[in-house]
Amino acid sequence: MSRIVRGGLIQCTLAASTEQPIEKIKQVMIDKHVAYIEEAGKKGVQILCMQELFYGPYFCAEQKTKWYAMVEKIPDGPTIKLMQGLAKKYSMVIVVPIYEEEITGVYYNTAAVIDADGTYLGKYRKHHIPQVDPGFWEKFYFRPGNTGYPVFNTRYATIGVYICYDRHFPEGARVLGLRGAEIVFNPSATVAGLSEYLWELEQPAHAVANGYFVGAINRVGMEPPWNIGEFYGKSYFCTPRGKIVAQASRNKDELVVADLDLDMIKEVRQVWQFFRDRRPESYKELVEG
Image: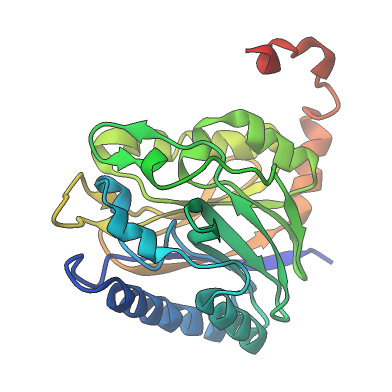
């Protein structure tokens, strides 16, 4: 009997002005996502992921300390507690990307993973932090991640998380495969003029190179007052063969749902023996630089 897992991805436009109080922005965006989580629950989604920093704008378009107020603790903050309740209600694994406070002044771009019974399983902190002018000043807000590349044994599948800019680095994607990830989620915030030509290239390549499924999520629309570019959506699932099997539009809020046959992982890896044929003893230059 095939192991079929129903996955879901949520892509959303910003639903509140950036001039509003931060708590108001957060609440509006959380409410918007909760409605999609409820829709996903009705559609039988078993594993769901939201976009990078889902409960606000992509505030890294400017460097202002006011956005530090977006941080929450993991797992003891209110958003993770809310998501634990929804996960339990719908028997749904939820990947929750938020702005995390470790201690005052030490902040990370993080995704928490919650199992289908509401149990907090752990978190991944974004490793590769860009500083791209104009509009992607992430080093002002985030420390580089220090969690390594964990995988999470959920009720339905073993999953990994890579966040946005991480996807340009194949090394961590390989580690996730070696650790047993069957699905890797990449919550993102990326704009058309910068990265769209890579969007349907890099992550299917990771899927093929490592023999797993990928769920890629991007936000949608323009975000004033910065307007650094169009967040072009096009969230998708792809198979271990690199085939995109479900994809959202580029210009509207959407829940993407796909049934993923995890037995395909074994089929693909028994043909393409990339893990068997690795030569790690010859790769020392990768870590000597």
